Length: 201
Image: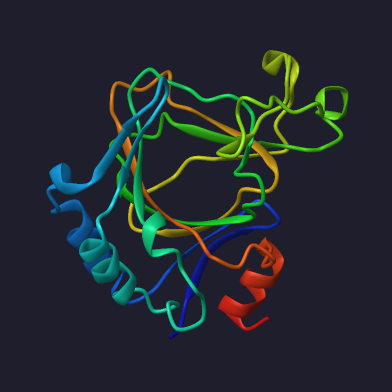
């Protein structure tokens, strides 16, 4: 499979494309999520696909033979209009997410990454956030300067480093944003290793 890199902003993210990506997006966008496991949180909604639908999605991925994707973690992550999430790292040991934008209706939702140095004064973790996220306690986010920002666009695939402090902000938008998120069983694979495997670097 030949992947076309749109933008390489390592170690934060790589935006890329490939033949057949549009078919995956269309397939997921046309699903009825009534059969999914829906979890509603303050700032986002999570739709976990059932086993059959998850298998169908994973079978369409050209990189599926290379990686052991979690079947029970094929999910839509929806960011409602007017909402934002705090600075965090995903999961207790999650290093990477494979993201496919499914619904992008504007350019108002901004994802930002922050360095460990920028948050060196607030490395104490909030135990109530675990195991879903690693979230620092008592962080004044307005004083933090992003090391990198991203506005997700349609028709791309994003290798996303979840092991760097980051947040998303959809508070200026009047639209929901929906992202298909995929995770791996092997948490020893970090962003750089996966990037090199994908693009044969």
